[in-house]
Image (cartoon, rainbow, N blue to C red; front, top):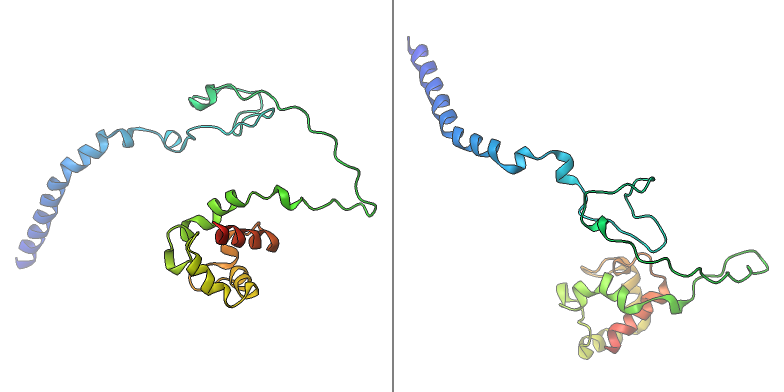
Amino acid sequence: MATMFTQIKLLSRRAVIALLMLPFAALMASSTLAQSSTADIIAPVGQVCLAGEPCVGQPAGGGASTSTASSATPAPAAPAPAPAAAPAADNTAAAPAETDFDVAAAYNQSCMACHTTGAAGAPKIGDAAAWETRLEKGMDAVMNNVLNGINAMPARGLCMSCSDDQLAALVDYMISQ
């Protein structure tokens, strides 16, 4: 008899919980999020279009998308690039010139978050005193820290595509500002 009362009590608790959850279930069922399909939720909000090339994500036939960004016409095609210089005698392509490296853009992409705010003790851009104490050890020591990381700074300052010379240019840029 006692177990029957225990089972009824347990069943009563479950019924009360179910009744309390009913308004929440009704709310979720009527929400627009529950009614939209997964495809609508993960659909891209736009497209990337380069001059003279089809937009990324556009079907091969050039079909239109429902995105408002795709309704914009792509920029006119850029003029054809000049023919490349003849390859070197050993048939290896020359490395891109260092002048192609945009120091300010690389700083904004990889360095700015810490070196503008001083996060985790990073020397701030333009703070001559902070940079001077680091440069007392010599530029080789500073570059060793840049290449291998130090404290919270990751190796190469997260600019994995930067060459060692480009990283040195970034340090020079931060010191000179």
